[in-house]
Length: 81
Image (tube, rainbow, N blue to C red):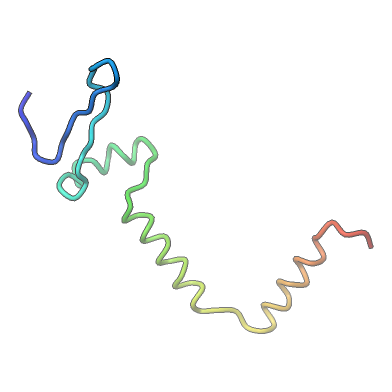
């Protein structure tokens, strides 16, 4: 098998090839469909989601929106009335 830069096979305790370590800087485009099919997220996807979250939160809430949200939350608590 040819050696490919950025790809390393790792062996288990019995000496069997069991894992593959792939450098995503070098092979991200090739691996993206495989990772997506497995349900794994690439770090840049998580970074994009985090950035979108903080952009939305930076807009903030008005005082009335905050008050309404707090009242709704407090009323939903399982306290005895």
